[in-house]
Length: 606
Picture (cartoon, one colour):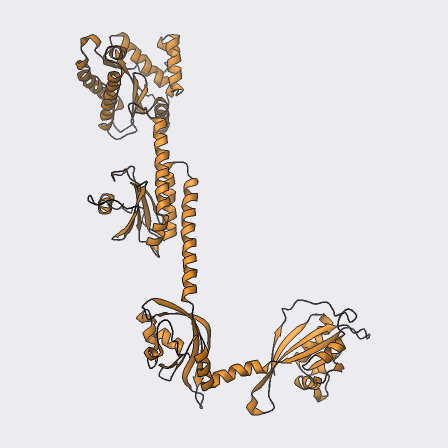
């Protein structure tokens, strides 16, 4: 006799014989075998079929029930613990050809108020018919095929050669019985490498229940089945084939996959949005978006390149490289990728996705205007579909970063000339000085004043004066561009006042400043000659070299004092400031009004 216990039942309160059916009455109404036992195993009552249960527990041997078997003792223990117990036991039938008998036996603690403590109500149910029916269906070939004809599922049988010998009339995933009978399951494989697995499954040697298998449908598309298989044996017990049943769950799996893909797409968009919101600087925003792309696409690297409307790069690409890759990974050839994406004779689409070697590329648009290029290296999975879903959001991220960059530019530059404004220039020079604290050649500050500018405006009008200011800013930009690499700055401080900072660049900054000043004066004189002797404009330039650890306010005061000296000595030239490191505002000899001007400048007032 074998048994299996169910000890996961929750503890129950004892049955109240006054508030519910009395145990003895319940025992008599129960259709199966039943016993009412004392804790010591004495039979207090039994129903008409109770003797069958006594026989089942081998209690008819005359021995105390608690000494007969572990199963019987477990049932008696219910009276002591108050916890119900259910066990299934299997015993041989009396007739050898009837197979086994299966019973579910339940023990319940009850109180019958007889002074013997908690008693046990033992109830048995014969469930042999359910198991025998399954066995009969499997063993009866004729009945099996009759059921297959009536079933909506795919039913099959393979012979000893692992070929289909029977297929239900409706077939499966487009295949009719005529196409499958006599064929090997290997022909259903999507990939030749999976053929052996299919042969082993359809001709299973061991029982298989509710397993998922993918096969190639008659239309060539993948189809998903949930299959159960039972092996067949001959009279000698040797395997001779298998029978199975399967249902087509392709539509369910497709819907589940679509939901999973939608969740992945939504997660990508949310991750991009969160990454951008957590950053304040435009370039950091795009770097964060690139980092999300590398993670979500399992890519080796990602680049996001903002573009102008004509397709030219707006800024260097923001990129993120997977930590397992070399940090010196070269950038792709953006110019070639852009030329591939934007043929001159075709109109750009809302977005374009294409592959170029190992790169997956996305060209984004904002309001039908090209605004960015996204490049991924060595992507995995359904990258094209995910990238298409995220295209609009990446375009918006690039546009958002561009707008913030433009706002930052407007807040830092002079509207007329495009040079830095007063506030941005002061901040830039302060940062440069802080980076080179203690150095002898931290940089040179040049204050530039346009001579006779008011006369130009009064004589020719403000548009001509504005054009002259723009010409000077262009000269300053060219001069800065020709300097050795360094943190150089050019600014319009206001009106006709300009400034240049020549930062540390590995060469003598004083000499560079002198050469730059001379170049500006001469180049501007050529432009000024067009305005005639009557209003001849010119440039006056004061230069101060930063001393080690000198404060910005002191440096600006010396440059301004030098400019004032040039103005007093006839204008139209440049001069280097004194190297006196102790110079203060009071020592410059400027008027109170001039001191206020310098003070405002040093405070970064615009």
